[in-house]
Image (cartoon, rainbow, N blue to C red):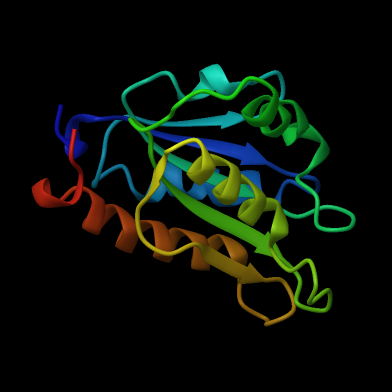
Amino acid sequence: MNAASRPLIILVGTVTNTAEQVARAIEMDCADLIQPIEVHRMEGLDIRAFDRDALYVICSSTHGAGDVPQNAQTLYESLGSEPRYLGHVRYGVIALGDSIYPNTFCHGGLRFDERLADLGAVRLGEVFRHDASDGTDAVAAGVAWCRNWLAQCVKPSSIHT
């Protein structure tokens, strides 16, 4: 299956719903680049969320002392407690944070990135880090990043199956 025929699955870890707003905007704005686009909040999900042949985006805010949001805890923890090889997974990361906390800036998304890479998943492109303190709109910035990311991902040579 080539990248353009794979669904895009956006897994959302959120506290204040900003990450979900970003994901829903991507769902609406990027439909011309890939179909279908599915948005799933992470509640109740575990490592099996990565069983499908799909492109994935982890869209996660950061909570507390650089933790993944509460609704993402079960999925995140299952990546450590039920580890298995995820070499078939191709993903991108939208990490939301606030640079007034420099030691934990965007760590919610970065923690997912690290754990997925440890299991053999392949991140496509760079992690998008949005800073809540920089005055830019997270939704607009996330959509712009995802459009560019998808344009790269759906090129036939960018994803190997």
